[in-house]
Length: 180
Image (cartoon, rainbow, N blue to C red; front, side, top):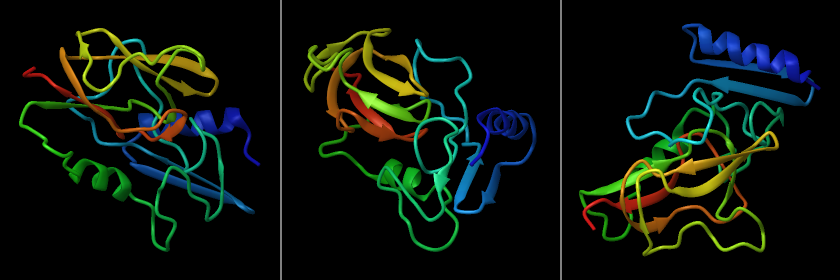
């Protein structure tokens, strides 16, 4: 097992250095820390100013994962796990996608929740009009609940993630029509 403080120090070291990816294996446990390229349309307010880089292929934050394991639909074949799942998600075009669809992406690794509580109504539904700064969802990372706010005004055209589903940094969560 890995000590959480040690993993957090590794994340800081990677973040402050010029290296892009660091992989460490110990017995049947493997951790991968990588920086993702900056995105022009990243997450919104209500989340930490500097979200931690994606770490490992399991659980939120810097949680180590068993060797050979995969989660969140990531491929589990041979070769290195570069950013192929993220690239595939970005290349997909939603049905009827127009030039004015704004993609709201996850600023962190965590669990996606559509509502503030299991018995509460969802923050937004497909077809709802949202305003800049309106809460869209909650992302849970390391037992912290982070509200994700919209950066644009428009109509929600697509919710790309199921409730309580794990998400990775850069995953598309919502598509909002800014022309509507």
